Image (cartoon, rainbow, N blue to C red):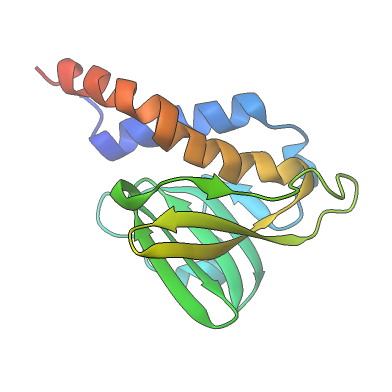
Length: 151
């Protein structure tokens, strides 16, 4: 049985992230391939959608990156951005505090301006960085690979 597009994206995106990440067991607030229970209560996955990166630092401070979108809550402001709207990102000083990570703000450019989202600095920062790298560099080529595999 062939993979759905979301399954294909999940496998490849997680592969890119894991290949580029270190010390996953030491990440404090970030997990891969699962959704924190607290986030799941606030942002249900859509049909056929899979979690890629889940960051949870509190009920008003979280980010979920999936095969379809990024959704998050920053200072009680909810943001949801579809993957087709992803553009440039600015992660600031993501290498800070490698041994003592902290909650860090990043910015993604979208139509009409920019949105802020949260992530964990240090080793875990590779997860959101490579999530967005997947969409900008890998997915354009792999989308064609997936399309051809369906013929």
